[in-house]
Image 1 (cartoon, rainbow, N blue to C red):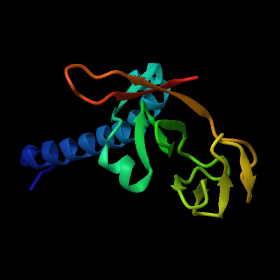
Image 2: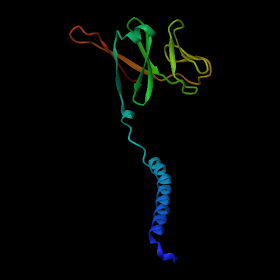
Image 3: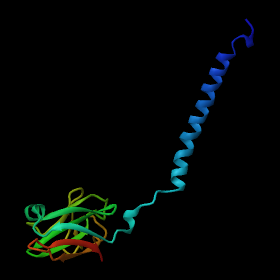
Image 4: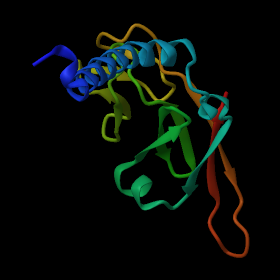
Length: 154
């Protein structure tokens, strides 16, 4: 049998080889192109977030609530009746999420026992700097509804 007797098999093998080379090129080129043109992030321009009503059950029971402020988490703390404070929820040590311990009146990072007071200042443990502070505003509700909490950048 001659080499030219079965051109279909040669065409099939050339197709597989070409497809393999194309797949390899795409697997290498796609991550490079994604790196060179990062996606647009509309969350980067977030200026304020509605956190819910003043009488939110999560705030009343636990004393805190974790919110998404664009791409970053924010912790909203009910320090006292009518006193709400908001901070970045990521620990400045290794970016673990902090939580509020009402008995201690402290924000605590459970990863390495870092502690912050209710002004966001680091008071013990390994965190190198304070938490970022956010402003909390109470927007009056209409027609008998409770006020709404709005968190914004300082």
